[in-house]
Amino acid sequence: MNKMEELLIRYPSLVFCKEDLLDALKLMLETYENGGKIMVCGNGGSCADAQHIVGELMKGFLLRRPMTAEQKNTFETALGAEDAENFASRMQRGIPAMALDGATGLLTAYANDVDADYIYAQQVFACAQKNDLLIGISTSGNSKNVVNAMKAAKAMGVKSIALTGAKESKSSTFATVAIRVPETETFKVQELHLPVYHYLCAEMEERIFGADEN
Image 1 (cartoon, rainbow, N blue to C red):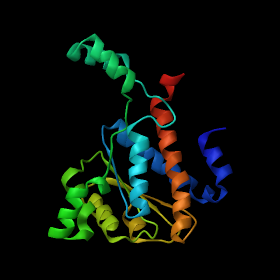
Image 2: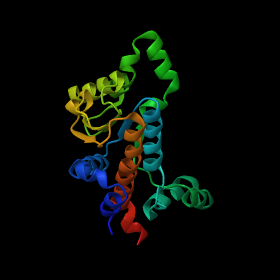
Image 3: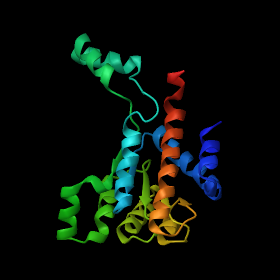
C-alpha cells in the first residue's frame, strides 16, 4: 500500500483533496531539485504546524537520511577522519526549509516598528529566490499576514501552496496550489492539516532519500 492509499483509508474525507495534494507534492519536489528552499508560515496552531513541517523536512522523519560517501569525504578532507566520523554518525541530510514564524526578534520588531500584517511578507521579500516555495497555513485562508506573504510571493514569481479549510479564500486565490481540507471549524481544519502535511513530508522524503535506504 502506498502512502496516498494509506492516507485516504485513514482520512477518507481527504479524497476531495487528492489532486491538490499531488500537485503540492510536485511543487515541493521541484523546489528541492532546483536548489530552492521551502518557507512556511501561519498563526497560532498554524504557527506550530509551520514549525512542525520544517522539523520533518530538515532532519530524518521516517528515514535516517545518512550522509553520502561524498559528503563524508568532504568532511574528512576538511576536518580529519575522527571528526568526519563523528559528524557522519550524527548528521542527517535535510530538505532546506525555514519557518517564517520562528524569527521572534524580527517578528516583534517589524510588528512594533512597521505593521504586523506584513511580518511574513517582509521575510518573503527579503529572502525568497525564484526557485523557492512558500507554504501559507490558515484555517480560514484569510489571515492578513499569511495572505500578504502569498501576495508577495506571487509578485516575486515565487510559487506557493495554501493550506486552508474548505471555503474559498484570499490565500487560495493567490496560491499556485490550494489544499482546501473539507472542514470549516478551526479545530477540525487543524485536525486534517496534520495528516496532509505528514503525507507530503513523508512522500517527499521517500522520493528523495528512499533509494539510499534500500
